[in-house]
Image (cartoon, rainbow, N blue to C red; front, side, top):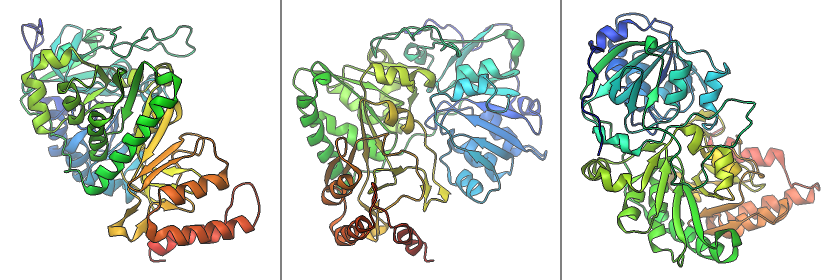
Length: 489
């Protein structure tokens, strides 16, 4: 149980969200807490969205920041620039219309990029907490890069949210990664170990406002698994069963990561049906989703380490009602730890992420529809793909009711190169590309992952491209014609 006795320590005082919002300059660079659309400040951003001033804010977050920040603020035309991941229709529309300048980047190093000045130096950090004191606060349902943001920002506004239980303190393990050049390893050698504290500390002189709120997180909404999701999950389960028997690094334990979203949640559920023998099953990733709670409840999962509790309404209720039990299995860390290349490699993580499309050369596009319109962002998928011991990408083989293949001759935007992942899973099967030359990868993907309605067309493409010679078969005009045709050009 938490040892906290009060939400706001004596002597700090509070003020309204409107008063706190007035302290934010109209063109301020603002870092916000929030990851997986939970743990984000709510009252002050909402007040900013209603502010009568003409605002042109720069917003920096470590992950999706929820409907108020990426919805209401964008609809109020209050945002001029956004880093780095967004997942709301309002922000997506503004970014693709180039009304808001947006830069996407990998999550793992974002916090230190802010501290080291790679991104604009923040004027203010606005964060959500369950308690605050003189020079410290306890974050709520996500950590992300909040610790780094508070260190880098000139001033600090803390929202203390009474809707979040103070017992969330029990999940947190907050550790500051030394800045480069680094002369020591991160002292985490077991995924469930703890090396930090439950609080974020700060210079008390930075704190300019404390606001009390009582607004729960927007719950994460998972769609009901479709037949295609279940087929992908079944194929992934088959691959994992074979891999743990083949791979000597998996003889004692299996460490896994799954990307956020409905497909990732469905894939987590498949773990409950996989016979891993007497191996320990451990999660080391970005987000805790409902599927992981199910595995904990079923005693399948030994432990889970992440940076966010991205749960449905039911998942939030389950966790809040039984914090002590879940906290014995779950630990939340800063994203500089959860997404750290050093640790993903050290723990031999099997990384499982979804993507938009994969091409016959083994490149993947995870972010841009037709190579042009950003969907959400790369998030942590690049951190895990490149550094995972086994890196798997999952996707349905078609979209638009089967009219568009997601196995294509050439992706129009590359997020993960042929060197970053080794296995592709669709509802039709598994393509293990790890030992294959480029022309062999093309055949493997067509035979095992492509939808049958596109197999002949893809095979014809490979044959024509191969006839042109070269190490990697390409017919550039014909490859790009796939995307032009789908765009109606």
